Image 1 (spheres, rainbow, N blue to C red):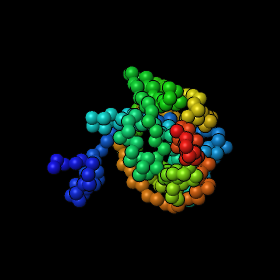
Image 2 (cartoon, rainbow, N blue to C red; image 1 turned 135 degrees about the vertical axis):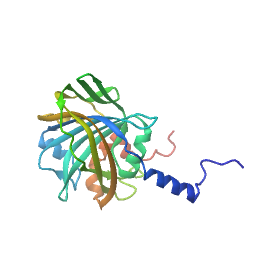
Image 3 (cartoon, rainbow, N blue to C red; image 1 turned 90 degrees about the vertical axis):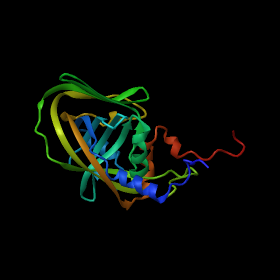
Length: 266
């Protein structure tokens, strides 16, 4: 019988796949990063417990084109500064990706709030423009002019916070207790430039980032970097406390509260 590809893999095949994934080469991206101070009350309102506001009410947007072999990827992130048990990090509210390959591991393994979207970085000489769009709305756009080279920083580490959960089959709560994940990223930069420009936040019912306005723009950069990431579950969280925030993950909040179809319904 011919090999049935949906059949079980052998132990050797599973081990080979695991070994290959642990030896990935550096994957470089070109990205635009904008950092600003926002309304501290608005920032505090989007943080599910046990996350708390960090020392400054910061928002960080990263819009990148990633050099994946054969499958160039647009990857975006809109994140707010947060604290968990004395650890400073970032809590992403939305992470648009341009194809499914980038969604699967992040959402299912780490609990990242990834969604399919449009992510574009354009450069024409000194002019830079980058944006993230979904459902026909460019809800974040960063634009400006390169104003000069910056010193290349040394390797750095950054922590992102994610909540990993599955909505319950019966539409009430979760199938299992949700967990808080710390995702540690090690970053290396090989080029960095300062950009003089601005950030535009557009109204979107699906991605309401305009609720976190640019109160004080702290900087825009364009650069080339690579990173790896390792995640770990740090604690189980109160399901009732998290439930009011799970709509952040879905375009239609009713998706996580719908009851099963009534008997006899189509």
